[in-house]
Length: 168
Image (cartoon, rainbow, N blue to C red; front, side, top):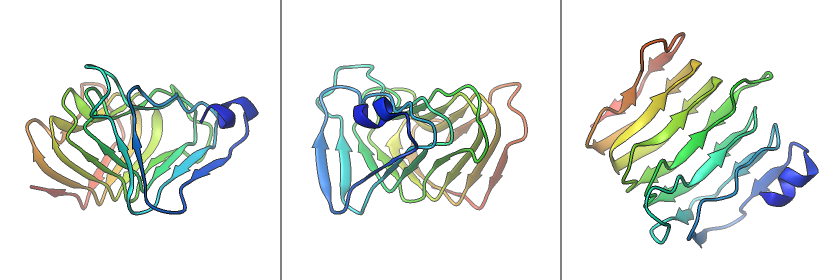
């Protein structure tokens, strides 16, 4: 991630096979616009050793992709999107991500616009998605065993589409 940020190019960080990362701290903030992290079945980011309140995967660029990654045991917000504005295609979370066992707040906190959250599984945590932006599509996700609201839409959240999701 640090190398991709230094290049400033829209590059892909890909895992070709199953891989376990036991993280003790948050991942570096991905800031390179248009970059993507592409996992593979069995790619796991386990944050069970991270300190309390740590937000785990930070996406600060625009037009980013996070696809096919399992984020486990995050003590804070599992995935935080911090880009304030988007330049075109939009940020995409999914398909194929699994977020499980996060202990504080929502699994995915959104502070931007033009976002697609598609084909993911959120389970065994507080809530799944907290929207703070506009133009968000939440499609084909599975929300399972959450202790709070699956989707939190604060006042002022506009132009969101929520269809074909499963709530258990």
